[in-house]
Length: 135
Image 1: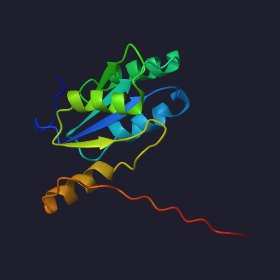
Image 2: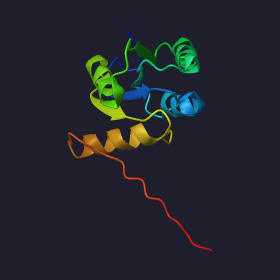
Image 3: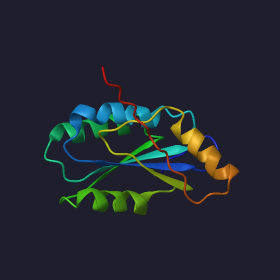
Image 4: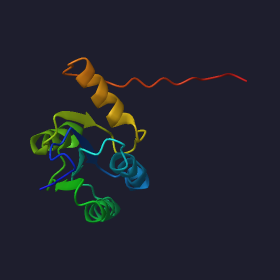
């Protein structure tokens, strides 16, 4: 069982994994280094054929046993199936889905949790804007 400072998990970060070894460390680093302490990171290996995915997952689970929990599919269930597995295992007050080839700022969970509590919201989402300039 995962334990944290307050004993209550505020956010469950759910990370589906399938052939993303080149990006996975950056994603998991952004999850485990959150400024909000009371988070769990649920990493779901969706039967990835790339053994590096499993190796990285085990590395993080061993390095951060209080924060990271890895789950394994015996057959590929696609993104929705992996997310559903994470939802079923989640203990957090809120869920946060992050694709394993993406990453978040270290303040993301703190900001979103604070907004959710301040406004008594059931759902909070982050919009990312990109600026493109022409030369």
